[in-house]
Length: 187
Image 1 (cartoon, rainbow, N blue to C red):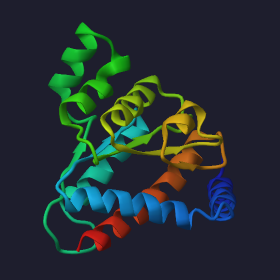
Image 2: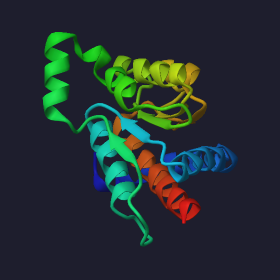
Image 3: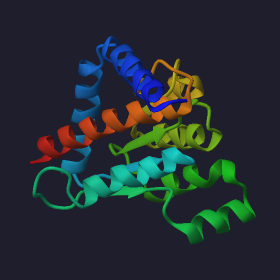
Image 4: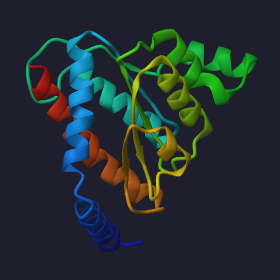
């Protein structure tokens, strides 16, 4: 693909996502997250591959700072503890590596944000199910249709594409807005 093709695809997908009119859904997800963080309840974030990098990015924006000076927020990336990830995966399997951490860190009223371009990542789906079992709010960022995550997401942001790199580009826009809005709401 040429650079022009990449940019044209991004423009097309951003326009298609804009047409979904996600403002009200985003406002609800931000309100739930801000309420949890103001109460010192955790926001847990997880994903695999590029979505794992996005989980760490989101965590960094909200623990450190994004656009505003403020206190650090109780946000935990479930992809960042190499010793836990490898020990659990070796002994029990990768499918439950995130749900185990939800069990350890999740709290009623907290929030889990799961990222998966297909919406079918088994370990993210199981984490969302575990979070719901604890009474947490679940937010999913996926590709077209939401996959299996659609059924376990209280707030779903399904980018209308099946092309992973393009979905990830739009996820970046969505979660940057999410971080800015959460940051503003907790101030």
